[in-house]
Length: 530
Image (cartoon, rainbow, N blue to C red):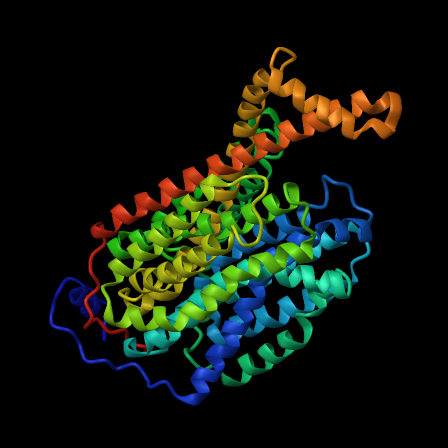
């Protein structure tokens, strides 16, 4: 089926007959191997997050240096993801995925052997860049290799893996570091990585390479894209920490991102064979799906970040305890995936998206009543709603964004689609950290105005704290004042968390109202794998 026929099918023409190959064993095993490779690449974004203090101690790194263990991976990965579409067409899915899996595995070994923070940052950047090619390649394969009637099986698999991997990352990392050492965060990839590499090189036969594309490779487009996305990711990651434009590096990289973005968009729209073809956004459903994917990134990565820092800062949980608490979301996603897959086959995709963002919104709204006493069970239902909401959104958004594109556009579009989710996560984390800091300062100021020597309630609490500190003798008064200040700061922090959850609730509700503007996918539209 040609691209033109597909486009006419989307517009409402007579559906074509499906011509995609059947779901044979060889292709399905190859696809599962690819999915597992994608799982490792996405898992490694968050697997180090709960163990950064241990890595810092092991590498004798400073507090300013250690965040780069995660940031370097993210920046490199976000550059490779959109580039993978071009490389997949030029080298073939088999060659690109095999190189990505083998390179990712080797760089995991190098990360485990790093002895300095400089080595670790370089190895992590290479790990993220090489491994990033696996993520969009899996999405592209799902929508070009398998016939549409098999998507209720295939879509939940990639949806579950793409969303569950970052969710359980802190859990896996906490367990490995607690039971063994931080080195096992990377060593755990070695054996599975070798298996995935072998299966990829022997079983993947989805397409043929087009080496002629390499002779027309747009190096200018690659350099400007790398500068644009790398600088943007740096600004979003470091901005909240460095108080945004009060830091000279943030100002410089913002300027680089702005200039490079202009050059990149100009180059992409004028060159014959761009590294990333942005014309996929002219497809209304792809553009809408990318917007929803962007917001999903905020919910997925933002909440995976929010819950652990609440549990660490307010409840004093260890990485292992945080992982066990966060596992509820992963379990909810795993158990709901088969039902969501079935619903996606019989229900209007737009309705399912609305249900998903509704569950997201309800879960975050429930947490707006958070206090410093909230524990596992208070967060239990919100986390279940989050897990179900993620799956209910992910599967239909994938289908809407990629399922109606002509097959020759899917590889390129898959990279763009995955990029929007990662950028959504980066923007979400920057927004969350900025709101947290600003609202905490505001609440701290307001609470400080209420906790004064003229208020009887404050004096009674201070007197009680002083009595509890009586064993310290003459230091009891000062110790009581310090504890009082800590209590005020804790309450201000909790109130700031509640504000962020309010903001996320409104954001998710807004997406529900946007669902009617998506074109309803024609059930008869088929994707030709050849």
